[in-house]
Image: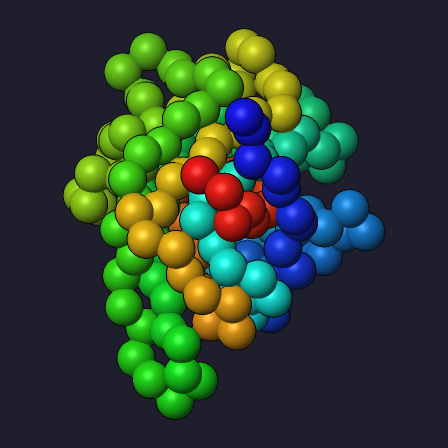
Length: 178
């Protein structure tokens, strides 16, 4: 049985490279402005219900390279690391949340979704042939343990491949199911 997804509304989106988030009506975020060689997006949410799975959608947009989902010059992105942290107390420290499994609807050869959860900040990660196959792409991440509601979560999406191979427009959704 597929999880029921609820679109998350970010409390904040911060780009390490100075990109500016534009919040769209469909719950997605379009990154604009500065387009550095490498960029990490730190997205923070307050949960209204328990969390067991996260869905990341990389969405095409007419403002992005060749109408792709990427800010890269060739229309492709490489998500080199996807990290989830949580805290239950607003004054407490964030603790890393273990991701049990990740799946993607499409993976470029040698750039599979499991490379985005291997704990290595390197040039390897999830890519989708966006330069030749621009399309909306989805990845899901199942968490080992349920995160209780009223928690704050912080998701860091790292893009360390270079050549501005960042996801340009994304949406994060949550489920209490695996």
